[in-house]
Image (cartoon, rainbow, N blue to C red; front, side, top):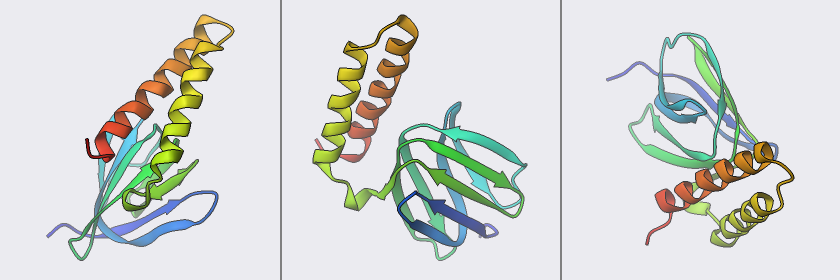
Amino acid sequence: MAEAFQFELVSPERLLVSEQVESVVIPGAEGEMTVMAHHAPVMTTIKPGVVTVKTAAGKEERYVVFGGFADIVPAGCTLLAESAVAVGDIDRADLARRIQEAKEDAADAKDDQARSKAEQFLSQLTTLEGAILPA
């Protein structure tokens, strides 16, 4: 059994998780990473994706995050999300709205850099949609 550590998932609206966990898989900007007890200190940005939490009790919980950053220290991990919700509470209409807005942002981009950034965000959202919503 893995050693537990403190994990907190915070959005501007509320504190979603604050408990002892065995591991957390986060969608870091440079790729997914698994955080466990005594992890080396790291601060990373978070891309839209699914955070998978394995609690100290062995239960697995999943949350969708839309950007933010994670502060990882040997004693724990705090993920500050721009927006976060439990996978079971996903509002399909909200996700569809975010995808439509990203499409519009890509179409309305004033330059190549803005277009590229909007297209990358759209790609992340559509990948996220495929990962959490049944076909």
